[in-house]
Length: 193
Image 1: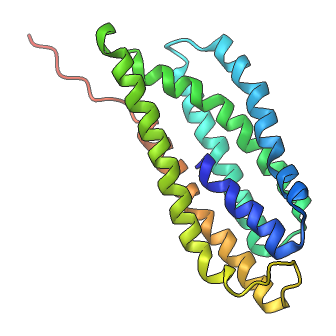
Image 2: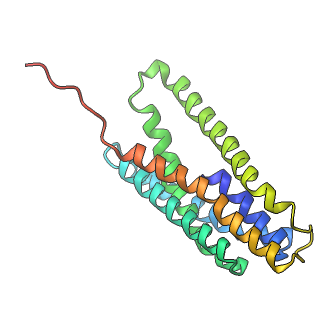
Image 3: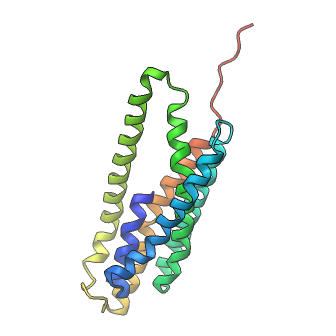
């Protein structure tokens, strides 16, 4: 969800609303800043008992911020309004990546921890690439109607705003799906009598 949300926001700001490259980069800067602030704080408080709570809350923040960004882009607000969901998204990411990595390796036998960590990171990278590709595919039809400058007609801009909001539904669905998957309680086998 993290990788797939940046591209539509940058394209939305540059192509649809005339932001410069620097201006659109500033829109996603709070994401990195709040991640850098949140991650060490979460890391200091991370215990096996709290891992699921951090993961769940991180995914809730991710899903909420993506939903807000989707609505804001779909209605065509001014780009600075996206600073708020970007900051919340970064905080959610800071609550998420450390606990997810920890959770993926804690129940693995010691001799398999390296392989489990590599598998986790590899799957995370593949998921990011697939997510960005699908979001870009969703945006492509409306991008074709926009000029490269920020001087789009009202109809083309409205179509692009809507397409950007819709393209953010894919990362939103991924975040909600991951939330459901990671918060469900594992089935424990019945104890023999």
